[in-house]
Image 1 (cartoon, rainbow, N blue to C red):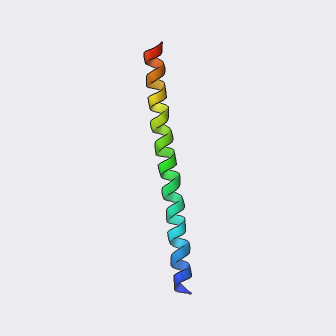
Image 2: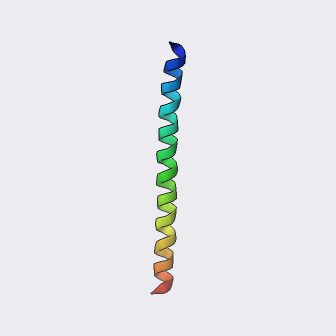
Length: 41
């Protein structure tokens, strides 16, 4: 059963990596959007 524990651990890592990438891309999009709004006004 050690392979199952390794699988669940790597799955948790993948989920955390996905959440981190999502937060990073969202913050990048937010910064780009605010810069565009500043330029437009």
